[in-house]
Image 1 (cartoon, protein in one colour):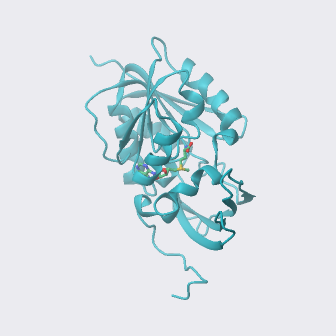
Image 2 (image 1 turned 180 degrees about the vertical axis):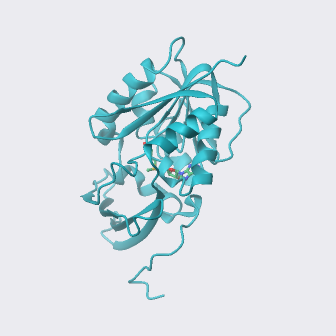
Length: 256
Ligand SMILES: C[S@@+](CC[C@H](N)C(=O)[O-])C[C@H]1O[C@@H](n2cnc3c(N)ncnc32)[C@H](O)[C@@H]1O
C-alpha cells in the first residue's frame, strides 16, 4: 500500500496497535497526567461513593501510560494492567509505587479481588459484543462482593457525536508531538465507530516523522452495558459526568 495512505482495514488487535506498541514511548507527549486532573477528581468521587465499605484497593484494566492512575495512586493501592507491554513500561516509569501487570481485559484472571475495578478510556477497544461482555466479566470477577465496578466508555450509541481534536506537547528532552484525532461513525447500523489519528513526531535532533492509524471502537447502547453488568452479578446504574459521558457503576451482589 502507498505509505502515504491508509485504508480502513479490519480492527487490528489492540495489543498490536502501533500507537500503543512501537510508539508507546510517545504517550507522555500525547496524553500526559496534567490533562487528567479534572477527570481524575470527578472519577475519584465516583469511585469513593460507588459502594459502601472499604475502598482501598483498585484494579484498572487497560491503564495505558498511567496518566489517570497518576492522580488516583494517593487514594488507592493500585494494580495497573494493560495488554501492551510498551504502555505498561511507560506506566511503571510514571507510577513506580504501583503494581503493574501485562494482561488482556477480556481474559485476565488474577485470582484475587479488589474493592474497586475501573475500566476507563480503554473499554472502547472492546470492539464487539463478545469482547465488551468478556471485559465486564473480567471486571466483575475481580471485584469483591459488595465492591464496585466502574466503566467509562467515551460514548454510548445514544450520545455519540462525530468530533475532531488536536493537541500534543513538547518534552524536556527536545522531543515533541502534535496530533489530529478525527472520530466518526461510518456505518450507524453497526456497533462501531472509527477514530483516525495523524501524528507528527519531532525527535530531539529535529527530525520529523509522520504516523497515522485508524482505530475501530465499540459503540453500544446504555442498556447493553447495564444488562451486561446485571447478567454478571451486579446491581447496575449509570450517571452522566460533566463531560456528558455515561459512567456505569455495578455493585457486586454478595454471594448467597
Ligand atoms: C487511551 S489508552 C489508556 C490511557 C490511560 N487511561 C492513561 O491514563 O494513560 C488505551 C489503552 O487500552 C489498552 N487496551 C486496548 N485493548 C486492551 C485489552 N483488550 N486489554 C487490555 N488493554 C487494552 C491499550 O493498550 C492502551 O494502552
